Amino acid sequence: MYHYYKWYIYTISVKVNLAMEIIIDSDNPEPLFAQVIEQIKVAVQDMRLKAGDSLPSIRQLANDLDLNSKTIAKAYRILERDGVIQTKGYRGTFIHPDAATNCKVDLSGWVQSKMEEAVTACRAQGATASEVRIAFANAMNNYV
Image (tube, rainbow, N blue to C red; front, top):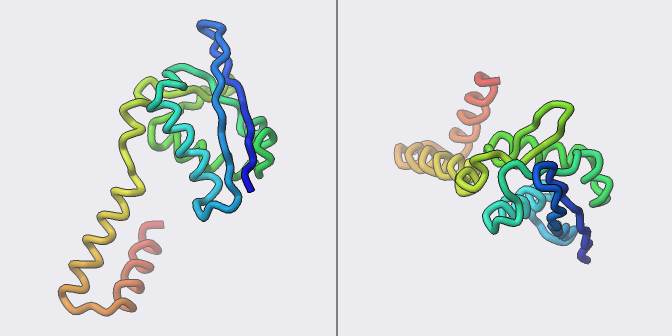
């Protein structure tokens, strides 16, 4: 089942309405927040969203998409971490000036690659899967 929602981005500088459609597929195994992230990144890459364009608030977008606001907040946090959007306090959330370049960086893919390298190296030395999991859990517990 597909839910189609359209939301509009209003740019203050040129006062032009830019339309962007976000499609949430509840049957898709990809998490909802990841679907939002991917569609915003694609819109930036396709130049449907440009540097400085404003985005809806977390509450507004969650309401428009009929999603939990924590889902949209997570998507926005990851997009901000990746340099695709920037939050300017009470003024709102905007597309980052370097968003087009930053969309090409896949931090999750990089982390996955590094983890695969580490696991491969550990397994090559004879470590069991259980030992690798325990070491990873310990490393994460020491980091936090």
